[in-house]
Structures are given as structure tokens and as C-alpha cells.
Length: 238
Image (cartoon, rainbow, N blue to C red; front, side, top):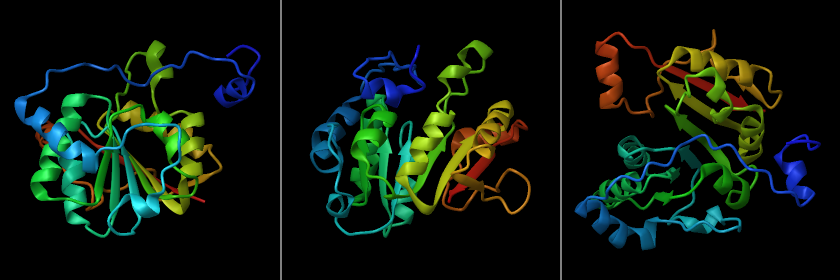
């Protein structure tokens, strides 16, 4: 970053700084069903990235609180959440095309009208397409923990990212993180506890029981049978 304190300061000065990505894009092969879903449902459920703020009031068929999920994988839990909460609108962002196709296939089969998806970098979408104070909740479930210490800079949960999320959340909105790796959970708590934009929503301690709105995945169930833990962390935006 050199003489610039952060990315925003460098951009304001017209200087391009190479960004550290929190993910590695793995190009899997699309199935026929995923290809068909992309063709059939992208025109109504997909959002193309552009440097322009979305009007969330007109994006969906009916108004409602907006939940933004980063990295929905194959989309099973996101579709389940949207189907269970028809009065809430959901935006999902995923960089892996097969996952986007699978999500659209499931959502299309259920006839959902309260779900939109991006195939793009979530940080860029948040910065350039989501208005400040517009989200009821931001969900970050099971992000890559980047286990090795030299890779910790790639973790998405950093001070700058938490500040960005705080700008996009409404006052009283929630930043909900979940991880199955305890050292990453502890790291998330460290980052969030010193951020003055938030307060931990847990009634006691640092962690929350899994909220009913977050579906338990097959992977999670399998891990629990093997004695693996999952940590839900929810911070409320002041």
C-alpha cells in the first residue's frame, strides 16, 4: 500500500493497488442442468455487475428487508432460507459458475421471486452496487479460513471489510458469520470486538446458538457426528 493508509485513499489518488483476494476461483465443469438453469433463469434472477447502485426498492417483486449472502456455494441453504421467508428479499453472491447454476436451478424449480444472484466478487458488489444503510443482514457462512499464518491476509474478515459491511447495514442490522474452524472463529471475534461500529449480539459470551433461519447443511451434520463444532457469530450494527 506504500504511502497510502488504505485502498480507498489509494483509489482517491488515482493509484491502482493490486488487491489480495479472499478466494481462489476454481472453474468447475457445468452440468447440463446448470447450463439450462443459467439460460432459463439468469434473465430474471441474475444481476450483471456494473459500477452503478441498485435500487433495492424496485429490484424485487415486493418490498421487504434485504439479506445479502457472500459465498453461497451450491446455493442449497440460500434457496431454503428464501423459500422459508417469502417476505424477505435475498441477494446471493458467488464466484463459482457451477454453484450459481445449481442455485438458479433450485430457486427456479421452487418458483422463488425473492432471490437474486451475482456471479462476481462480493466486495466489489458491496462497494459499487449496494447503497449504504440498505441491508437488514449480511451473511458470511463458512468462508475459507486460510489456515496458514502467511495466508491470514487473504481472510475476508478484516477491519476494512467489517467497516464496509457496517456502512451497508441499517442501524440494528446484523453481520452473521459462521465457521467450523475454531481458530478462525476466535480471529473473527478479535477483529469485530475492537470495531466501534458493532456490538456482539450474543446474550452471553461471544457465540450464538444457530438461529432457526440458518439451515443446517449435510456437511455440518456430518461434521457434528464426527465431533466437529460450528460457531455462529452475530454482531449488531450500531
